[in-house]
Image 1 (cartoon, one colour):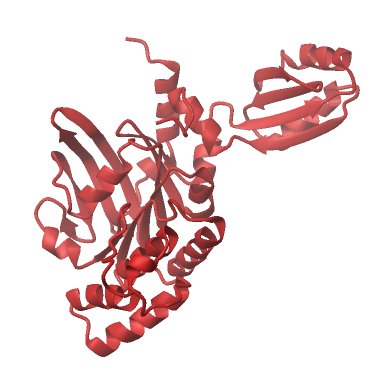
Image 2 (cartoon, one colour):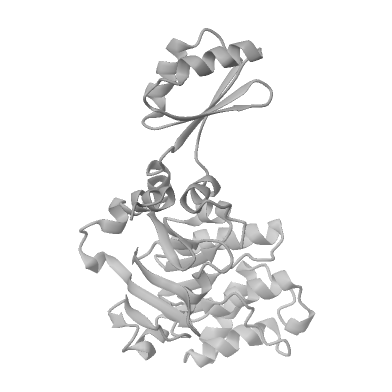
Amino acid sequence: MNATKHEVLQSNYLETSYFHDNVDSSEYIIEVKNLEKYFNGFKAVDGINFKIRKGELFSLLGPNGAGKSTTIRMLTTVLKPTSGDARISEYSLKREKNNIKSLIGVCPQENIVFDALTAEDNVEFVGRMHGMSADDVKERSKVLLEKMNIAGRKKPAKTFSGGMKRRLSLAMSLVHQPEILFLDEPTAGLDPQARRIVWDFIHELKTTGMTIILTTHDMAEADALSDHLAIIDHGKVIACGTVDDIKRSSDNGNVIEISFFSREELIKAKQQLEHVDSVKQIICGENNKLTISFAGGAKGFKRDILNRLESFKTLHFREDSLEEIFLKLTGRELREN
């Protein structure tokens, strides 16, 4: 059976050095191997594989229902995999769940706040559950609530907004200073200011050497925070690597937009550029604009087309966005469920 265009593209994206490298496995704190999860015959996670280096932020990017949260729930021991395994630190997910629990912090997609308790009591409760002393947990609670900009830490959590509860959940997941932190849609529902507070705090956590695994459907978030990411759709990993790796692996990974003074100039330029080997696609747009997708280096391509064009109004180079990459890989937009 012939491979479809999307299958070929997905194969290209998975052939990154990050995904298939021969680096010593001791560099990786998490290795996921053929992990699957079925629910009543429905395959929610379909044989996924990826590796995460110690101290990096790794994102699972995909639309709602792609399998991101199910993957996180398996890796955090909440759900039992149907098949496959993962190594987290030196422990097997299938055989050594209790050892894994002591290493990780989890901020799930649903808030884990106890409404009847104060913010301070919520954080301290989790700390004591992890065996922290009263003095240590009180000091740690104070620091985290200040970092999360949660005022009124002695007020009941039921009085908090949804955004404040989200930030409180994050503080609760960090009180015991875990080696590995799982964040499932950590900024979902937050306003831009609260989102920036969480982003800044995540950046700060990265400097401590903590390994962070984050799920998101927000391309800007994945781009801003990730060291590496896996794009997941219908339970499958369809691309894996750095954002730059994935963009470079794109079939038409670079785009130049050129505007002209007249329609006649645009048509003439299109005819001149159609036969350039590195040009993959030319789209005629409104306002006398050509959008040209091309393969290879941008510098050489710019020089080539400048030599071919007699005149133009503006020229702008850009790379494929993660949204465009997802569209190429799946045939649909990332925002579609």
